Image (cartoon, rainbow, N blue to C red; front, side, top):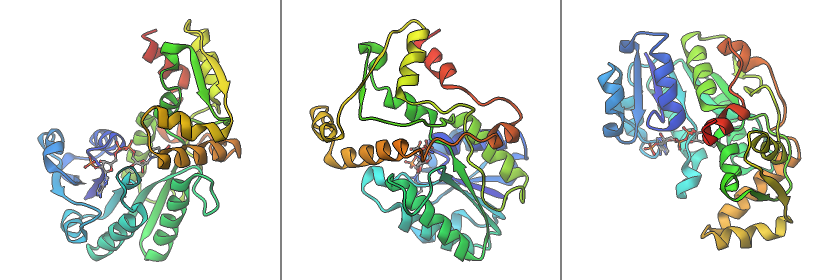
Length: 287
Ligand SMILES: NC(=O)c1ccc[n+]([C@@H]2O[C@H](COP(=O)([O-])OP(=O)(O)OC[C@H]3O[C@@H](n4cnc5c(N)ncnc54)[C@H](OP(=O)(O)O)[C@@H]3O)[C@@H](O)[C@H]2O)c1
């Protein structure tokens, strides 16, 4: 049986729907914090069990009978939790439950020296997997295309895209990454350890995104402001100082080219061209 964690989140949910096209529902289960949020999957024949990375006993039950677990990385940083401790608990629970292989949603920039804090956690989680004695694959997912749209903020309304200097990012859409994850779960052994970067086919910075919107008929001007102004600008929007540190790390990592490498692996895995930022911006504009 294949167990997917985070199946009430955007990526995990899409992975389960993609897996249902590849393997029988009776061979798929989910480990979710709130089973009520997975009732749609239960209705499709998927086994739903409660599992919280912060509660190891729940995970061991949720992983029961699994040969493989897709460990969707936790978003604990968003609610003050410790993602690395949570991932460690999940790996230990997988071991205790007799799971043979863990597939982990890592990130293109995973490195102990990344300027982007989550990428340091991804690298540390890969190290835990390396030491776990389990078979493992880490999906080096490109930066989410949805984050690219988020970085554009309300620029499609205001015509101004203001942010610190950034760099090129090989944006990847959730739907494509989910399809790739499902294919790799259904075909174990295709990659051992970290995959190549799973990316879209183009690396684009915020100026490029503004240019695409402009070409699509919604003029957007890219305005660069100094890093030092980020905290005050976010505060004015009601955001916390920790968000400024996070976003500054993101900008520095992108300037350093950490999110930039384009690789054909995603397209080769899913067998069709990846979704483009142009597709997504056009959809947002209703074009
Ligand atoms: N590649 C990238 O560029 C990129 C960008 C942003 C984030 N990420 C990472 O990718 C992950 C998946 O992305 P997404 O878009 O699907 O995020 P999402 O929609 O926010 O989903 C996160 C999932 O993690 C689950 N989760 C959080 N804390 C947990 C815990 N203690 N125990 C078990 N599950 C827990 C959430 O459960 P609930 O539904 O119960 O809240 C949810 O299902 C994120 O969590 C983050 O680590 C990657």
